[in-house]
Image (cartoon, rainbow, N blue to C red; front, side, top):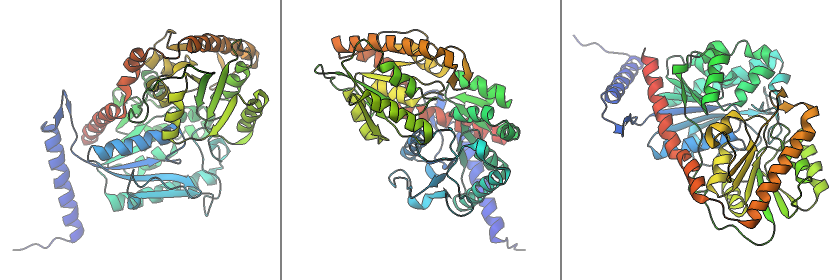
Length: 451
């Protein structure tokens, strides 16, 4: 007797057999590098709620797409955008991208950003009504379902432990899933308690979560109740093809660079006020980054008061930022809130001395003590998650001005830093090494999903 199976059933059987063979070869250890398994090539659906560019998480995603492609994986991307944004087709094929477009149709408001101040016009999650949140979740759910039906991924990789991660987990429980925490999603849990109440339940169902630092891992476990063994510290990386050292000029002024959003949480007004207080005045400050709204305008006003020694570059491409860092002697990141800023590794690899705040993510990478290469500014208790008490502003400005004076004099007397020390710190954070850790997280997610 001959049985004729419906085509849909045949397709499902083939898929199950293929998955079984995939897991068998994976568990059998046929693909190994050093002590770790190497994954067989996979079809990976990447999902990010905001534009896959302009911000740290956007650049992080671009690096993952590039590394995954080099390792033989096939990528598909779902992302929130507005305007005429298009991702470079060299990163991913145009027919492997689906966008949720904001500012038109049902989503007629600016794209909600994971930070309250974005380098483009945005909406704060705190401002969204319940109907807008429903529309937001519905829009992402519809596009992600279509992407899954078309692409049939082996793995889903979502960015930010927030609403979109919850939507994806609910509609794709049968697919292994990982999520990367970039820090800003934990901040939203504090800023938006009315939304946060419904987030953790779905976050706990994600197979494996990737953290940027051990401190962040502890926060994820505490805030969401995720078992520590389900969280892997992967970190962040930089492209050593773009960011590398070249000879520093010993002529003229000391060149300083800041790269990031022009906002209060990043400490830019603090930096600009401190620059005016330095005793060493032979400097130029380069501000590379965008912004929007009142805070951005305030940064521009403070910069204009200083005059021509502050150069506003706007948002730079990675290539142009790398060129700027190679010409600069000093990199300053006076942020009040960070996960693990990739820009620190980029600056170190480019031969910049570093001044930054002693936040947990910074300390994990740079160490707990200042050195000739790195100067740490210790912060007092903050009034909010990313804002100091106004009474502490004068002391903060003086502390940063003092650190700047020391670093400026060192750079003027000896433009070349200790490149060997910089390489020892930054060399562990190239993107290929970070992606190997990511593949181990994919492996863990596959194992967890089978249980």
